[in-house]
Amino acid sequence: MADILQQLAATLEARKQADPGSSYVAQLHHKGLNKILEKVGEEATETLLAAKDAAISGKPDEVIAETADLWFHSLVMLSHLNISHQDVLNELARRMGLSGLEEKASRSAQ
Image (cartoon, rainbow, N blue to C red; front, side, top):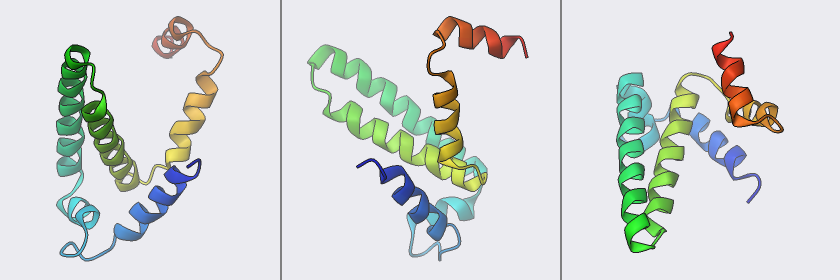
C-alpha cells in the first residue's frame, strides 16, 4: 500500500499522452486544465457534502469514496502541471513538527 501513490503517478503519466477515446485521464488532459480544475472543485464539493452526511449518519463509506475521487483528480491536476506528488509529500514532511499556527504564520510572512 505504501507505494500506491507512486503506482498511480506512473499510470497517470503514461495516460497523459494516451488516446482520449481509450482513457478517462487522457480525456481530462485533452480537455485541458480548466476541465481538470472543474473536476477537482466538483469532487471537493461532493467530499464536503458526504462528510456532512456522515456526521449525521455515522457511516463513513461515502466520505472515503469521495475523498478518493478528490485525491485522484488532484493527482491528475498535479500531473497536468508537471508537479510530482512527491513535491506535495515533501511539503507535508517539511511541516511536520510545526504547529499549524506557526506554519500558517510562516506563509503569511513570505
